[in-house]
Image 1 (cartoon, rainbow, N blue to C red):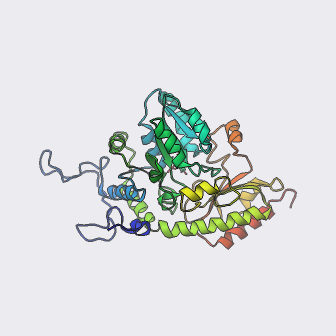
Image 2 (tube, protein in one colour):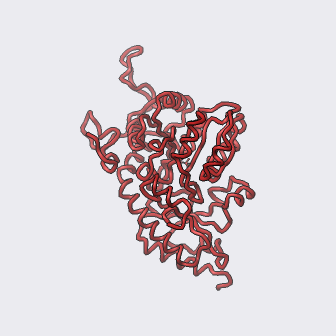
Image 3 (tube, protein in one colour):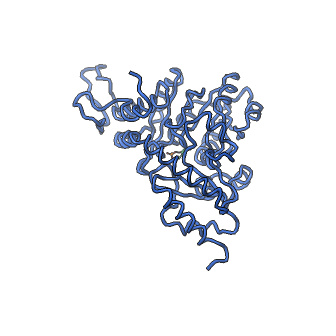
Length: 386
Ligand SMILES: *Cc1c(COP(=O)(O)O)cnc(C)c1O
């Protein structure tokens, strides 16, 4: 029986426990498994190599992304580290020019030391992607919408360029989740996630996921997952499985709230610029509508210079100043000094990550309460005010 995504969130992957009928997948808190004789396992050997709770999550992410194989890691960066380990010295990557700061850091300060190079390109501009392709390029790495300016890249168009030249396309789908966007169906070869964000959804677990369609890529990733060892623990796998069950209802509310707040911000006069692909004024609006089932719930805005952005953060009462995103509670951050501090000030300015830029992860509280909180904090941060 083929079921819809809303049902798949609840019944996909491994539906409960076959042995006992437990409705929730049990936490198999074990490091190893009894073997019945030399070479006679019951399918499980050692929990880095495989664990039934993690396996349930891996099967689920594969199904949700409409891939064939899923992988769960100890963090989003452990997932990205493992995927980047597909490459070798002298390989080169083309990377979206506004990506998660940690992805930039691992490329710049870890993989570059191993001779794996990268070039940052505005992947929203398709001709510049094609121009950047050279023989040594092995893959294009895209975030869409990208962090923190919510730049939308046409995933299908980039996948066509990638495949025309025999390159892989990797997409970080953290901001939208498979509930809103399924990059493998748009031609991506590998999807990566920070499960810490919307998939877990409750700001209580760090995790990472990957999904692929192709068996040869999956075989290599499985080998690397086991060889590198950054796997997700059984208990954390359980928490992410639990989070995913409510992903549909959460995302609906996240998006509804974000739409309302973005429209209000745009008309408030408090912000010089609002970045949100759900606004008709956003340059990514049309492509976002075409390739995804919603604009997500991340909004960035540039606070008008009449207001002191430092003070703004201090004056918020309901919205929490913190790293991370995608939880039920609204979080706000200052990309220039927090998530994107690993990027040099020159590059930050070049790509538009101004000091006045504020990033909002819209939670599922009452949108009216959130608007009221932002409004009082902006007003209280007016320069020259007492
Ligand atoms: C948080 C994040 C990551 C890194 O994930 P961790 O779970 O923090 O390691 C990667 N990409 C994006 C878009 C993120 O938001």
